[in-house]
Figure 1 (cartoon, one colour):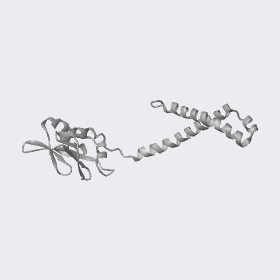
Figure 2 (cartoon, rainbow, N blue to C red):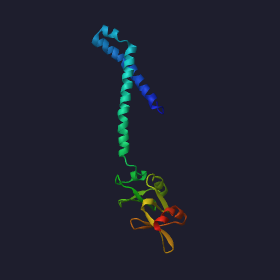
Figure 3 (cartoon, rainbow, N blue to C red):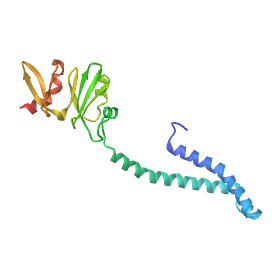
Figure 4 (cartoon, rainbow, N blue to C red):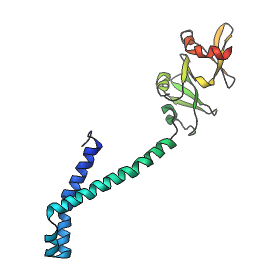
Length: 184
């Protein structure tokens, strides 16, 4: 039943249960109640009752399971996939990612720094919640952590809200058009 709809799967389960347990109900009636009980409920009636009970049980389980699922989904805070690779706090958010030889340095908004073996481009692909931009071939920064852009010794640098700076690569300058408003 892989790849089929849940409704079809539920019907197959209920039918299987009725085929297996319907005859068992008839047999148990005969053992416990004697020949009269065996005559009172036929095989198809027992299978029909078993089918209806199975459908009712499956429906009840689905109804009870759905609210629990939505509560769990609401309780889960959306976070970047990259944060699942490191031992970051559950409420931590990405601040910046920097390339360091074959490793990357991940800095979270709580100031924690983590170093893992990974390419910067792969790390950036795993930032699907926190909005950010590449400012250099070796640096990605969260938009919320950009305080502005300024020139230092004739070169553009990104001012971070924590007070630090990152270099801006010439081909990445257009990514920071939103930051020009912050500097003004």
